[in-house]
Image 1 (tube, helix red, strand yellow):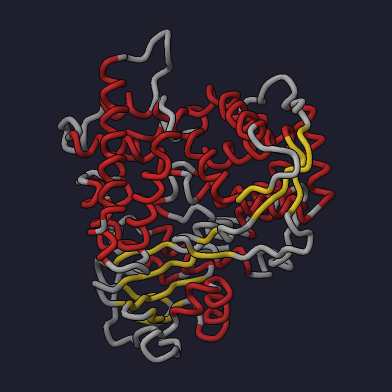
Image 2: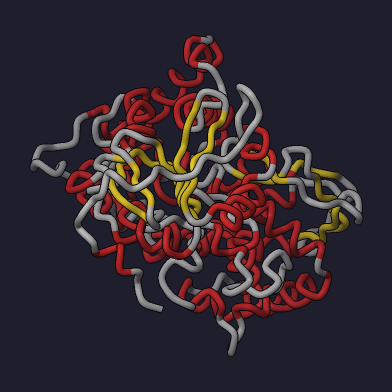
Amino acid sequence: MTSPAFLDAPSVDQHLPPPPRIPGWPILGNALDFLKRPMEFFLDCYYRYGPIFHISAANQRFVVMAGLEANRFFAQDKDEIFSSEPLFGEFAHQMGSANFLVAQDGAPHRHMRKVMQRGYSKSGLAPHLDHLADLTYRTAHSWQDGETILARDAFQRLVTEQLGTALTNHSSREHFEAIRIYLSTLLNVLVIKRQPRLMLSLPRYKNARRKVMDFARLVLQEHRSQSPGDDRDPDLVDDLLAALDWKGDPLKEDDLLAATIGPFFAGMDTVANTMGFMIYAILKHPDVYVAIQAEVDEHFADSIPPWRELPKLQHLYATTIETLRRYPVAPFTPRGVSIPFDFAGHHVAAGQDVIVVNGLTHFLPEFFPDPWRFDIQRYIPPRKEHNQGLGIFAPYTLGPHTCLGAGVAEVQLMVTVGALLRAVRLELEYPEYEIVTKLMPIPGPDPKFKVRIVEHRLFDR
């Protein structure tokens, strides 16, 4: 499929009409639909109004771009049109950093991605796969037969511990609550703006911020006092300490602190939420459960396979990819508009806020037949529906800001879910339960979603 001609057109026609406005409630606008059923809402607007439209959510206004043409337009931008700074700049300011990756664009952003690339790569995670599985086994061992657990909380704690120890050689266990409060407050107040700025002045947030920064200083101090060698492999923090910024100067202390805490933020919402959806989908599909359990019982028995071998566990891999499609936790990408542009016959002025619904293509039947059905056969030959071309399968957003840790996330999901199903037998708290998706601040399973530990498979209790 070729790119639309307008993607390469350099001209901008200010006489083109603005995107159509979606009717909404007084004051609230489209906020209720956006918060409660975002993908269904965006799909309805896409079919009725086309690939670009204008929504309001209380006091906020957004231009929404959706569909394959929007994804490809966004993917081709080289930071000339879309900017992260308007939405994430204050996030970086709260972190005290002028070199915080998610708020950067252009050359500084590309440079910092290179600095962090090894730490967030599959090969960088490769030496830690058995450790990730061991942490999963230990977590499962702490649960009691018959106990019900809150899936989101349990997976957030596990994922954060895994990434922290793998990327910084340090546990997050004692600092987890402060990290969670700090991150969720920043996202809810500064990025999606669903909470008032007053939250940044409350003792709960200030205490969490202080504890998180003290923790980051501790991690940096330990790395400075003990270089990698026989006792430990080099990790992300070592790379940061050795790095220069894009101007050739050493990274400032505040930049180092912000980047050091990054691994503890990295999967707390994204990977943990995806893991919750993945476990739900497996428990809802007994045939998938049986197939995955047979694979991991065979291939995880002695140690975890190398990361390049994991996709050969066909059912585990396909379930991971289908979860990313059916339950995308990053289905839309917010950006600011740096320069005006035209798209699909409409003009968008500079200074506006844009939401690119990169995950909308996951629910278009021309790409994924019966898109609301969870079907792992989509990724097993000959179908391979995730390999249809640029912009069709897009769970990690697109363009220069494509998730740096996307590959790590897939490996972490396969290892952790595989180890979990090998360690314990699970079931839904209520067999008839249907998952509820909530923005917290990104889409995730309802925090009240529970699973029951039926029995332990590896340990005598």
